[in-house]
Length: 158
Ligand code: DQA
Image (cartoon, rainbow, N blue to C red; front, side, top):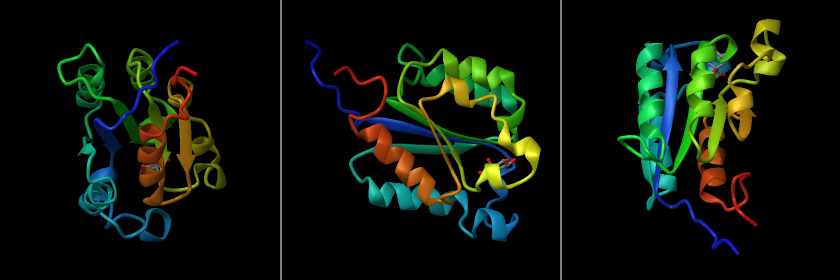
């Protein structure tokens, strides 16, 4: 029987295009917190966990971070959370990069993408992750970290 795994280690929280503008961008949709606020909140909520929160507007940089996060990559994280921003809706390269990474993976959206413009309802990222959270605001990141740290996620051997 497989021994239970716990994910108390390091979690990479990736944020894509335009998310560096949080706190100044469509406050009624995305809330008033900045990424720095969200990072602090996660670090306070999960003190024993290594939370590494990053943002980029460059898709190639995002792909490189995902490659490096893989268990056999240069950085080897234990779990990955990603809010790809608008890349969600068309960036097949991110889908393919995530598909190669075997670890608990969660896609997070601050807003409820299903209640907005029709083009936001499609995610080309979702098939490559374990779970999707949308519409919970910054709390969605906390929910995602809880999930990664729990033993209930899909890859857990039972
Ligand atoms: C978003 C939703 C996307 O449609 C949008 O392009 C974003 C942010 C969210 O967090 O709600 O940039 O990913």
